[in-house]
Length: 230
Image 1 (cartoon, rainbow, N blue to C red):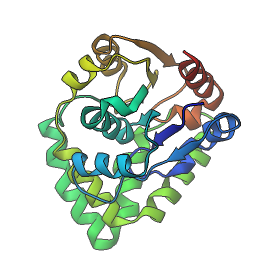
Image 2 (cartoon, rainbow, N blue to C red):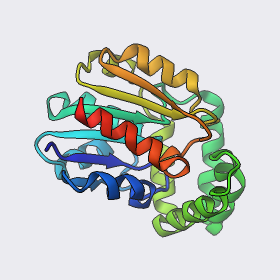
Image 3 (cartoon, rainbow, N blue to C red):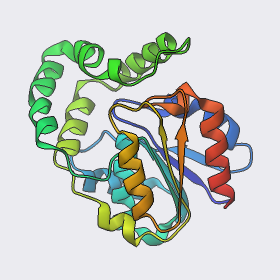
């Protein structure tokens, strides 16, 4: 079985994918690569490639998907198939860039928890019985990673390149998946990626926002399983 490399979203770690790791690791190697050790997409992708198997399936959520696109740009011959979850192929919009500096300054001043609580996490999820526990987990992951990772990731996101040409050139099996109610990376962005990727399937997960791996884990895992078997 081809190994699977998972790339988590901003200020998330392997716990973002725990349901999927549990289900998919029975018959293949599954690894989660950290994406916080540098402040450019190019360097983050190179770090993934250093530790990844020679050839692998690649799935990324949110910022992880953005890094995944850069991995494909740098080494398309090593990626057998690609899954992009709740992410965005475009360069950062100017309005979003303007928000980065005060967020980074607050994080460096010891207010990372405030930034995550007040400005980021409230927009991530749909209302559901799972929401409080998922928000608590998101905060735990963010605090474990710390302010320097937040700054590195913020700079990398701010300065990221457009990856539309990368997606047009990728010919392997691809999954484009998002929560129906994702306010950060809306359905329209995923329809765009589906149109760009020649071999892609589009899956919209109902009753989910930005983190369907945790909000609707069974549905998300099933979609990834189908993609891996194509």
